[in-house]
Structures are given as structure tokens and as C-alpha cells.
Length: 366
Image 1 (cartoon, rainbow, N blue to C red):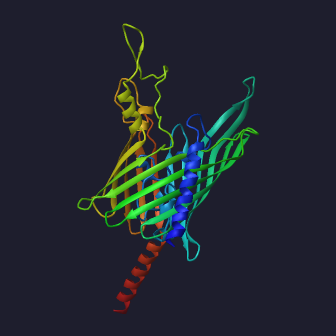
Image 2 (image 1 turned 90 degrees about the horizontal axis):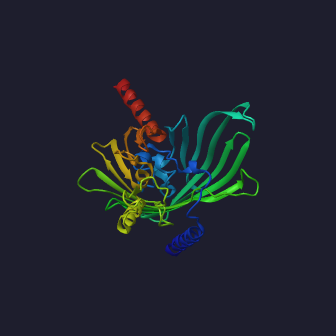
Image 3 (image 1 turned 30 degrees about the vertical axis):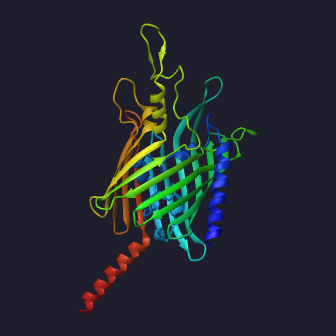
């Protein structure tokens, strides 16, 4: 048994090395809506991979390796009010089959609203809509009490007026969980795939691939869990110091651009890969989250003024099988999307219902 799962892990790492070697470090990609956060808790913790072994089903889209029996018969609904009239939402359901294992079924969509179309002469041709959609199936399995693996298969569809793109993407993850030290680690290869039917015939684009790592640990004597997440591990250079960078200063005497020192560039680029998060649980059923994403801060900050860009925060409440979450992430002044989550644990609600019926029956008989 040990040899079999070791061979599986070795095979996964070989696949990751191949993808990383062939991944592009520049240019654009398609299906970027896959990088949206469909969990209020995930948004509050920096909109990156987090590694937490608990009963929250909203985290399974980002980390399929923790799909398990503890999530059986859960439903999660998400809604995010994004920018400029754009909204996106998702619905997720989890189920464990006795022999096949634990699965997650998810559908998500992004609605960009309606737009007025025009022809080459500027004449209006009527309104059209645009949207992105994904249907995914996730699977997870525990290889041992400490190790687990999982994967998501996503079918993708984009429709912009009369243009359509269809494709697929796969996430592969492996996790280590140590309950004695409340420690959890996850390595994730995200969005491995391609277009199958491109917008432009013969021009195939790739989804936004990423290689991520996450660590979390709950402290023993205080109700705090810290999170450290790393993204874009397949490439080093995350910053931009070209002549067109608006954050570069110009020397008043020589009229030349003043570039940051090599040390400043190194540390700025280094921390762009990190997201730092913190969770506080003042009582058993309440979680308060906050995080800082340095790359978002550097990309979205405003010249000559302080900015909350890159900061996020949220609140989760889980009482008797009902889970509610709210979070907010700051990108720029006036651009802070609100994310809402609502989840139901049907097994927990059924147990409560049966317990209440038993109490009422006992009162009647007494």
C-alpha cells in the first residue's frame, strides 16, 4: 500500500515538473474567471490557496485534496458583487458514495451584463450579453491518516455575443495534515488544460496555470490560526520595472529614471509570491479572517496616497448546520467586491430535526 501511493505522488510531481517547464511566464491567458474566489473565507484570506482540514465545504473548489466524508451532503451557495455591474456566483454540492469515494459537484458563472453592439459605421445593432461558465467535478481520497490527494475536472464555456470558446482545466493537489500539531500543508497545480473550441479557429489559448503552496497552523493555547500561501511558484519575476512603470521617479537634474536598488527589487519580487492570513475564533462558531496580498497591493496601489489595496477581511458563522460568510477584498479606492456564502449541512440539520422530534415525543408521553 505504501509503495502504491508513493508511486502516485512521484507521478504527480513528474507531471508538475513537465507543466512548469512548458508554462509561459508572460502574455495572457483565457478563462481568467477561474482565478475568482468562490468562497467568502478564501477571499478574506487573500484569494489564494489555503490549507485547512475542517468541515467547511466552500474551500473545496480551491483545495480538492481535502474532499472527504466530513463534507457529505452539504450545499454551498456563493454570490459576489464584482466591478462595474459584473456579478458571479456558484453552487456546490458534496456527496460521499460508499465505494466510489467523496465528490464535489459545482456549477459557476460570471454575468458581465448587457452591452450595445455597433457595426463598422457606428450604427447600433442591439444589445448583447457576455458570460463565463464552468461545470466541475471534484474527487478526493485519503491515502493515510496524514496524506490525501484530490483533483478537479472543469468544463469551461465562454460566450461573448456571437463568439464562443469551449475548453477544460484540471486541478491536482496533495496535502499533509498533522492533527497533533494542528498543521496542514498543500501543494496545488491549478488550471492545467486548454481550449478545445477556440474563439479564433486554429488559435488555441491556455487557462491561467499556477503552482501554489499553502501552510496553516492553529496555535495550541490561543484561538488563532495563521496562513502562509505562495503563488506563481513556476516563475520568479513578478514585478515590472520598465520605463513605462508609473511608480518610477525621475531625477530632476539629469532627467533620468531612478530605478530601485537591486536589493529593493529582490525583496519586492520575493514578497509578491506571498499571501499572509490570520484567523481568530473568539468563540466556537465564529471565525474572523484578515489577510494581506503584497502582489495585489503593488499592482493596484495609487500614486501619492495611501491605499488599502491587497488587504482583505471577513467573518464566518457556523451554527447547527448552517454556515454564513461575508468578506471584502480591496483592489483600489471604490473597488472592493463583497462576497457572500451560505451553506447547509443537511445531515446535521436532519439530526437536529430528529432530536427535536424525540424531545417533543418524550414530553407528550410524560
